[in-house]
Image (cartoon, rainbow, N blue to C red):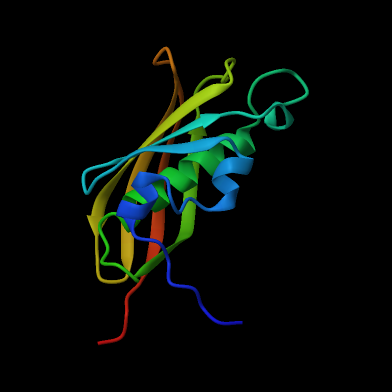
Length: 141
């Protein structure tokens, strides 16, 4: 299978090249700058837990996506990133079906990025905080 050229962060921010999973999970990209990425999730009913709140796995997917966009916004076009480790601390339940994740890169090395993110409800309630390590796959020189 031939490798596809990944979309640029500018294309992602414009919404033109969002991967299908964004739509499946109800995600939209609000902002992608070198300083931070913000991803909003309008949680589909199928991602609610049996008890009502948003399932923790959906929040993890949102946070992972926001961090991936934040790291990608610091790379040059064609370079790639992938999650190495993601540690999430859940603080409170997401009772409403809209969750917003904000992610920042703490340090960008040659082959690893250290990042942080938080997920909040629309009213500002802190739902989760995360630290992550992402691998950087640079183009050969």
